[in-house]
Length: 200
Image 1: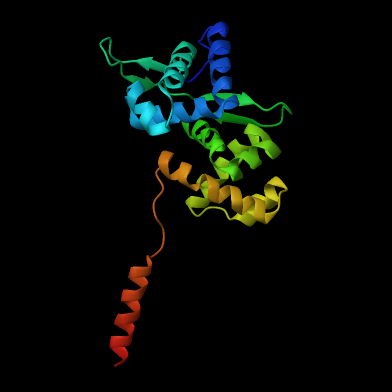
Image 2 (image 1 turned 30 degrees about the horizontal axis):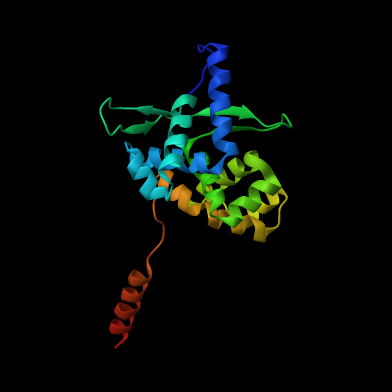
């Protein structure tokens, strides 16, 4: 759903409004993120995974199909649904920042309902702030920034930065290729034994 100038303005506006619904309703964002992760699910699987009643699951799935962010891949019963890719760049209300709405951001918003730290951060800094924090979390997991640098750049406390970085860490590891850096505890313990053995 990446948008360029070759698309008709009506299509772009419809897609933006569809995505706006995802960002306003954490349950819809959570459902979209689940379908995007699983790459083809039935309503029964949605019900089981998200602990939704049948009527609620069908209502949510139909809303997302009507919005154009989910599509049906089979005509038979049970129907299988997949998520359309979302990659929409918007400018924040202050006009100073642009951010891109991606499946990772939608997943983070979906976790708002079950993660108080993400919910609090969105209340204080909005979706644009969460998008920025998500970018910092990717950089942090790659070893490129620290929570203190994020705090200074965004004019928030180091504690607030660390809290949101930790809350977004699972989202980053699900959506981005992050190489593990450094040695594991087992590696370090093995080195200690080798060094102790060499001195004996």
